[in-house]
Image 1 (tube, rainbow, N blue to C red):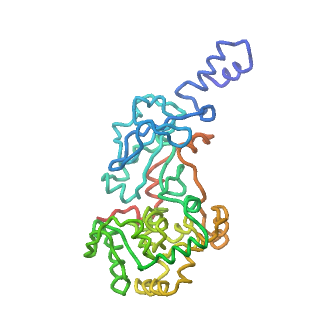
Image 2 (cartoon, rainbow, N blue to C red; image 1 turned 180 degrees about the vertical axis):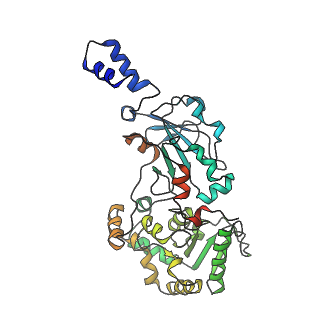
Image 3 (cartoon, rainbow, N blue to C red; image 1 turned 60 degrees about the vertical axis):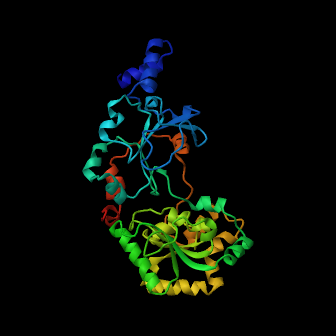
Length: 379
């Protein structure tokens, strides 16, 4: 239908037939370009397949307040959002050969860093070029500039979920009986793993009392310590399995360390990336020290000085602390850092969506825009 015909149909109230044609063109046809999200009260999110090796919500579970999860591909035509985890699809299996609603969102999902994505699937950039030029509408990753940010943790969650107050921090300090721990069972799986293991060994060689949970560096301790065991330590080695991957900060930082009342000692992500998402003055970064020996010296100093160690928990002493207040504090101290605030979940994002967009290239967005040392997997 030409634009002039559409305008004419809208201009007359007597052109019933034409009005029906316009309705079909704008709303129902496969070439419609006006999304209908604002007119719905509920939504269906179809996960094309569960990610390999991961537990995932059961069929029919509510995802957010308004969305329902399904894995039934027979629901493809009804689904408002279709999510493709990078481990769960093959090009020949994708629904581009099916009839696709134009208001339907196709989402690329990865919780792994680019190096791991390539290694896990044996992918090259050319393999993903098949999805260039608009197959996907959104990305859902841990990166701060993803359309849907699905990170491993957040400052907002910690501030709202962890206990706060001076007496809380008093108890945290009182419970400390050991210096440092590290939970890992991947010592030599890749060059990055060997690098972080080498750094940990240098810390030990320079005198750090480091307990390792897992089969690494000769440790015989279980790799499943309890939360109570972990809270006895002052420091946790939040050493990632990737170097300088943009915004790649995992459960090693959020869950293992901060949720267990330890100060994370960070290796892998850049300091700027951590500053953008972490509670203020809550971590120690290895890049601030000229050698592992100097870092060991500093950790030993903190171990002997409770007042100095306590400074890493000031963010939890203020019972009135909010994320908005903390963002202002971080921005004042680090004006060049783009501080990450609270982000919307997939269902929230879908219902607030007001425009149509596509991802020009997953390769460009996820791989090439990252740092070289991150994207090159090194076995």
